Image (tube, rainbow, N blue to C red; front, side, top):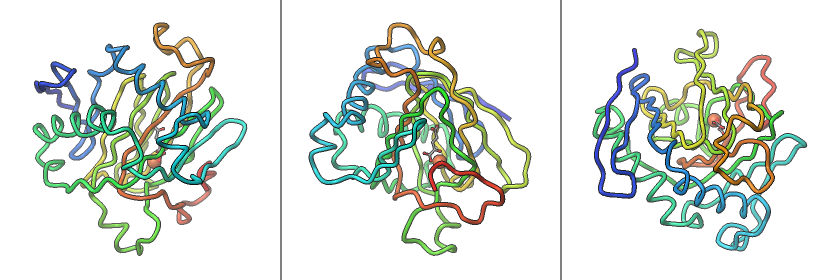
Length: 238
Ligand SMILES: O=C(O)CCC(=O)C(=O)O
Ligand SMILES: [Fe+2]
């Protein structure tokens, strides 16, 4: 069952509205309409993706994954990402969501990594859970710390399963400016990016510097670790 709520904040966003999709799974939609706010993050991400952003590309050799349909920096240290953007896009929405979600409030924030991915309009991401490298299976299973995931540019279909890989799937249509938070009981849910829509789904006022696809930024506890236990999964991240 989906419940909606909103919360006031004294930051740039006057009111943050969100849907509690499930305990621990929250969708914030109120950043959608503020195009200047989105553009600032888009500009920063595109500079980083093109190797022009010193705070990210200048620090060290960052591992990246690249296919014709996908480019991803998996391992950006949290402290290298611009601090004001972390406040605006991670801490502020998370604090507002915590006010409405007691389960999220109980989850400890442990942000260490930013993952920045660009999907072309043919890009996809296979079914996976956001496991963290360096942890045992038991430790993975106990993860509850929030993952804050931002969509920018074209729309996509993000699908998830609540009770394991064999469960039924649910689709979410994510739009530019949406923030999805998963944590607590949903921290290890299976999820996928099924489809990225073509160019005309993004707001025309947003400038993607000629890129036609979608950007995803996630703030998370650790570096992604491939999910080898998934049966018949073609996972772009592996
Ligand atoms: O692009 C998205 O919305 C989700 C990406 C994702 O699941 C991941 O990078 O682990
Ligand atoms: Fe993921």
